Length: 292
Image 1 (cartoon, one colour):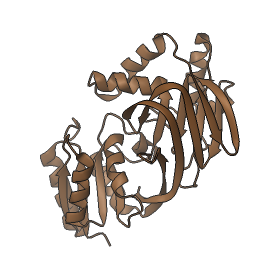
Image 2: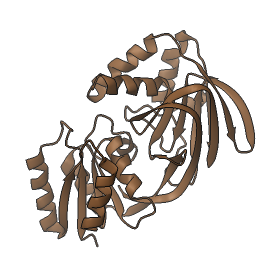
Image 3: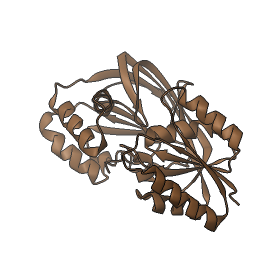
């Protein structure tokens, strides 16, 4: 029985109207008989302030209202906790919500959250410091997200503009050593993905066999490819068949160590982390309980 619900909301979302969303929550609260509170995130010390809100309100369910970055901040505070997580997509990137088939409309997403039972959900810990609940990557997409953030772009059109610029720029192939499943091997890549889910929010399926509750994650390596094969690569990815490409290698594991020949920028759940020279990734099985 859900008695207390804390809504952690990113106020910068252009798709939300504060008055309308609070009226919707009030209607649901009357029907389902729960107490609720909304906390609007701030730019400074966000995680610490979210933690304080959770401790003070003592919710049964915390609903993250925003994009992948907001979900990541909330989910990290709920790791290995009995408190359940809900998601209402309202960001520029809603990749995790897309993978969980959560509706984009606030009212529909709230209804689905309350009507669902909590399901176990894995997390990936990175360098004992960061957490990935959706996708992390190095290379083309990470650089695109960095461009996107630098220019403060919004939405899929803004992302698409920067992706086209990145694909049109001079190739930036990087080298790394991957140690996993008892093997050590050197690779050159255009992109390296650490995946807990199947697809990006654009619908691009990069990890067709990925499951969020199997105690494993996937490492996807996109090897250097000739420019004329880009259409074939994009087509296969959106068809959900990247594993059929000769330029793609998928490795399934529960932990990995990656050493880069030169420091690289990484994005994890939409947030950019700069100058990563070494990366240790380990799965945390059933670290969350998510309603979807």
